[in-house]
Image 1 (tube, rainbow, N blue to C red):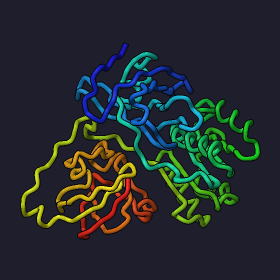
Image 2 (image 1 turned 90 degrees about the vertical axis):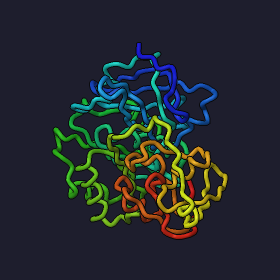
Image 3 (image 1 turned 60 degrees about the vertical axis):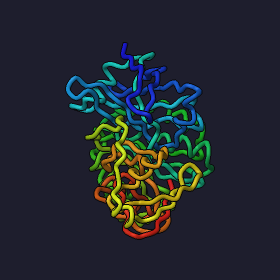
Image 4 (image 1 turned 30 degrees about the horizontal axis):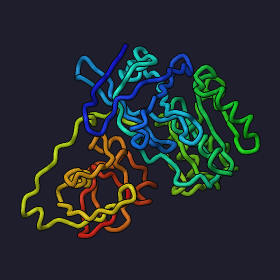
Length: 351
């Protein structure tokens, strides 16, 4: 049995895996038991992810982000789904080691791959394990919205289809609202931008969300652009392996008198409360919020995970690393708090 008793940071928690669901031969879901005292901390939105601390003989631990495949509106407990990847230490450790009743250290839900409203028609794309956050959005749209949902789901072969039975049940329950279009590579070949453009042509008024391997998402982006869908209605989720340790509490950086004198002023809205802070030019937004004792969401502090994504309402920032954000995210004002430093003297930012 794998047992973790004490969290390594003030932000993380030790959760019990209440159930293991074998989805396919190489994918399994972990269902988590959330104690009453952690309910608020682990409230989540469809499309978000959890960061798990996985033990390692070489480095002590590695951090891996896994999308929640559950919907907070219809599923009784949060669930992440993990698919084995060739040479993937984290995914293989989880699939080989974890059992129901084991405990593991987890950071609270994060991520911006989630609709602000479900009052839309949705065009969803998933490939392989990229279906994980997509099915969470799909289920939420069916229960919280009234529009149509179209899912384009690509897999190597039929045995690779994750959530096949669940998707069939949802389609049977919502026959007039849900359309599932499977793309099986062993039969149809790799989906090209040309193929996809024809497939999506009837749905260009929808909101598009996608997750999957890079080549697949490149093809979807090209197909949607060629078909004429505005970039502002296209949303994608990208994961990278975290190189740092987000389970360590961040150090508070001291500020010199000269830096304090030249600091910008920022009004930050966090959890419905507004805070006015001094923002030295060489410090990130996450740095100054931690220095003030605010419970700012963050994980890697390296611009790799999107946990600290927020919106600039007024003012301008610069970012050293923002590759995880799509161009449409940047156009909509999204920034990464762990990378953002002030350019203008006065700013307003919302989490």
